[in-house]
Length: 106
Image (cartoon, rainbow, N blue to C red; front, side):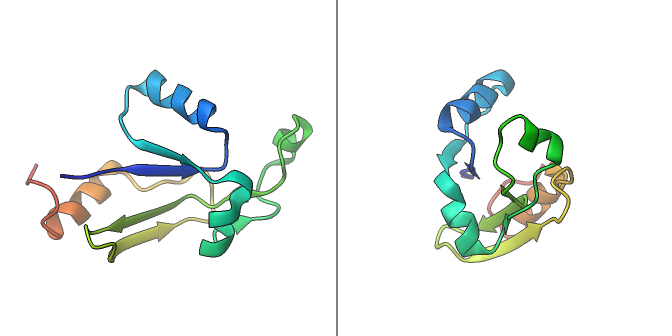
């Protein structure tokens, strides 16, 4: 009974390509122009490495953020990093889901 949604600033087609490559079934949403990221306070105006900017990407990026909510939209757990290369391990998510009785024991 868990639904996963990923929100990213890149074009939907790029994200769908990654989903197919890794065989995942998530809801992929596009945050065009980082509008939602700015509202959430996770936009990083100068966060993209210079090398990426030289390839034509905008300098603004989004801080990787995980928000786990219950079915009523109540935030149960959130994680924000200041290093775009660092993400919580999947076991962390499973623990949060189990502790909140949103997933079967694994």
